Length: 637
Image (tube, rainbow, N blue to C red; front, top):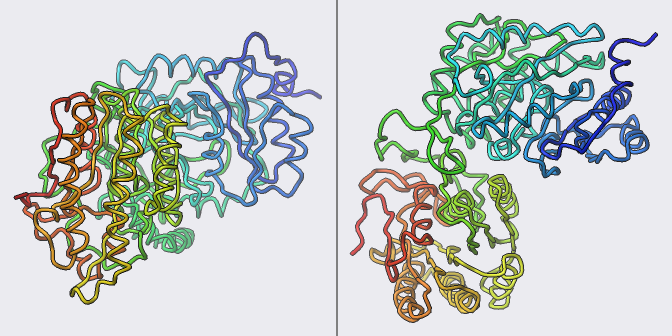
């Protein structure tokens, strides 16, 4: 006997031209039959979307079966189970502006994908649309849909449905750029409550999430589910969410709540294994988002052992008691430019409070240091920098672009419309991958070149690669640097002295010499000097000397190149929280880093990046041979 759904699948046939605006990403693991059934339905859609199946290390022949039956589906086989993180891999494989998710036991109804693309086209601030879910052969509406539709929260009139903070991944279409800029689904979250963190990060960037009931997903919950393990994952992920995005009191409440049940304690034990990383990644949500979360907590019953920051349930299957999706209005302030959805703060912030204050946790790294291992993590602007097209059409080369100031500048340039090439050391590969992700999520090209800029031939190769990729070099940023702290001149080896000069001075000369022939009129060279150039610390003797040399080189080169329409300037940072600090300073100096400036704290890389944007932009057309100080109140001479 043919069920109604099976009949619908068999009757569905693609017609007309494919809708290239939306692609489909499906994840699966050891559920071959369910995956084949869902792919049968998706392949028959009239939109004819491109489909990517990411297989989480199946051992039941799923990969071969899909390849044989659906040759048009791109199969990405993984050697291990990345859970929801596999969706992020799939999103990066497609080039459509919108991506629909489905699981191996769900599929979209004909016409829904086209309608979702129409809505996303019409509403640039809309980041995610959540669909209605029909469960089982009888197509009963999941009870969660009624909660979404009856959201009592204020609704933005210009949006197509109730505003939410939370969604079901298997019933959502995302704006690809917004999804990637928010970081996508992390690999460590597995499956179970993974949507919560992404939803808050999207909202924190000003993206809207709306429920649109005319979009429909069919869900047939697989019997191959471990509900107990999934509930533990939900609690663990909620705790990680609380520790990384909630204020300290709320995070403590969530932690205490988890101790009141056996499942809660299992989730807490799992979460504690990732505590160190959670603290490194701690970036509390903006005040308006946090207010919405608190409103939900005040009006929502919770079961014992369920953390306060609970998550979206899973349609059609058993749900952790007391959980419901989060529905809060998001009120970003519109500003000009592509990234206009960054939230406007309620009032001007005290500059003393805009970054962590010392004492910092004692820490030490090997040179050159990794941003991913710093506590607290530096703020390079991923969740706050807003572009407005100041550098549209330009290309830039940024040395040391993988972390610290260089990473913040690369992100800012991308969001201002520039393509970038970053150079980095081979051991910084992890940091380099992160900035490539963020730049590409902003819709710009990012080329990453590893190697040692102490080698003149490598400096020439960097510029040659930029010319090959971009056809020109509009902006050159000589940012990479080396320093070490020494108490006595006797402690400074000739090798260390040579390394400091080669990295900080020679490379600047070699790169500038190679780039100038490829720079158009209006080009710009920006060198990173330092407060050390004017106020040298004796323990940084070679470094301070090179920074004074950079400033002198900049002033002379500006006069030399002015006649060719190329401007040359400096940015002089003060104490900025970058990987160079724990990699080159003893723990006691790291602990109090930034304490002695007027603002009483170290600066964050995102606070330096706007100076580089200004100097590269047409707004600085009469600025050359200048130094912009970003020192937290420590004056230049």
